[in-house]
Amino acid sequence: MSDNRKDNPLSTGTDYEALATRFRPIFQRIAEGAVERERTRRLPYEPIEWLKKAGFGAIRVPREFGGGGASLPQWVRLLIELAEADSNLPQALRGHFAFVEDRLNAPPSPQRSLWFNRFVEGELVGNAWTEIGEVKIGDVNTVVSPNGATWRLNGEKFYSTGSIFADWIDVFARRSDNGGNVIAAVSTHQDGVKQHDDWDGFGQRTTGSGTSRFEDAVVEADNIIDFATRFKYQTALYQLVLLAVQAGIGRAVLRDASAAVRERRRVFSHGNAPRVAQDAQVQQVIGEIAALAYAAEATAIRAAEPAQRAYEARFSGDEGIDKAANIDAELESAKAQIVVSELVIRAASDLFNALGASAAREGQALDRHWRNARTVATHNPLIYKSRVVGDWHINGTEPPYVWQIGGSR
Image: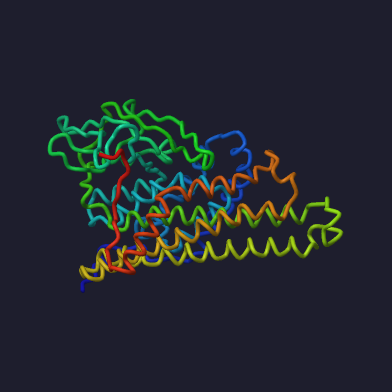
């Protein structure tokens, strides 16, 4: 087993409190505007800019390259803190961190170092993989074609989460010359890239998850990446972001429910105390919400540990260790997703058991927690996650690492 970390430093962890202290004042500013952004459906351009300038997009980049050097469990903890402030923000950065992770898993090269510098300088990467409409499962209508020294990208994607805020977009496309699947990293700073905020879901409304169109968009040759080289635990990493979002929502539910009970002055004639804050049944509701939020957060952080092992195993030279770590990463993220989604949805619903009908008024936007948690839980259907986990435990069937959605054939 070889270890080339001297020449290829890895992000294995840092002082978490020192790292988090850098960003907590920004998280507080983000939280202060979260309800208003929700009520007016105003995209968080300014909060994204605060995070960019503070280097949030480089927290996984090794410290030797100017990044934060955070491990994946530390990264999840920080995303949870951000999600507590506004659950839309970490999801908007989901594609960015996946692309960062892919570059972390790439062999050392001048091109990889260039991407690290871009991340440290604050540049963000969006995501554009999914096509909707008549496209059949397995097909890709977005095409990238050679054009002299560069390439041209044409096609349309939906669910382009975070791309409207990004400097680059990680686009899943097909080569016109040999039919190979690739990632085309395309700059958004050109006329050939057009983006639209047309996501109309009832939750996670300000993630910037709409349509991206590419019309002869220029892609540099170095930014055409063979999809077969994509890091193996990518699906697990995408789920870790969603787990962090859910756990952050759980913390926000506890925060808002506790504050509302503490401040409430109206009581019911058949209640148990002269103030709601002293009502034993209401206290029980808040206690149960606290336990649900705690379990969700602890599970999300634990689920990130095998992904960190998979990242480190990538450079171990031991295929057996590498494979085992990637299986663990996929299965643990799936098991966590199954249970955390239920915990947080329950907490977001139980919030209303502690309060009166006034809690349903739009001005407080307390319903956003349930809507957001329910929307996040629809990603990567839980029923299939459960089946994959069950098949592994019964039959030892290796989980799928990449899957697609599309029309049936």
